[in-house]
Image (cartoon, rainbow, N blue to C red):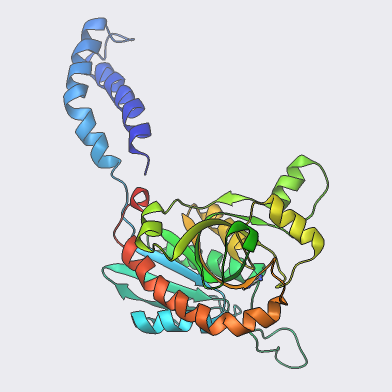
Length: 311
Ligand code: ADE
């Protein structure tokens, strides 16, 4: 992933070690030995370290999708199979896996609620930050035993900001994620922690591949479908183009695992528009789901087998 940063300091170290081996009795090595070692290193270090520093190709991709209805068309089109026992027994999450063009694709959803409501839960999809982060974290933990996830894509619907150029049905590829409902006025460090802004992995090639449908933008995350005036202030401070209920928390789980990540978000409603969010959301959910279904196979086609610097 970082060849040019690693190769040259490593070559210097390699060169010095060669000199030490060549002149075990003279410490530090004599200038003549250093010269001979540098010549040997010049011919051998570069190919050796270039081979060691070969960027890893993306072969193991996780899609984190909160709602079952959002995930189903993609799961079916790739022919992924449900994986019993993928998550710990108590977890409500669902995993689907399969091979696609030489890549292993894992889709994880947040499952259904079995906790709230009168009896055995409300049965609705688990939405929001906690289930999404936990499902993504456990999935990456599980894949760690198989060489690790190479990339995580958080896909789903979102609200869009008209003032930032978002329209219903637009597909956003995230450039960063941040939180808008974590207010911790205990000084700058806690405030920055609360906002929890994280850049996502750059995907300029994917943006072009999905052009003209896709746009780049910042996604702001909170646990409510609607927004209070205070939320709106923080969303503006975050420079948000779109608003969702998962991206920042999934980004946090990915950062803990060192897994590159980005979001693919389809706009169902306009946050700064004049219609009630829930009404517009429900009206456009079906179309957004089919737009997502159109975009996700293109995403996997684009990322599979590429290096992270080729996205
Ligand atoms: N998903 C779709 N629309 C949303 C909104 N306005 N806020 C959060 N998540 C959403």
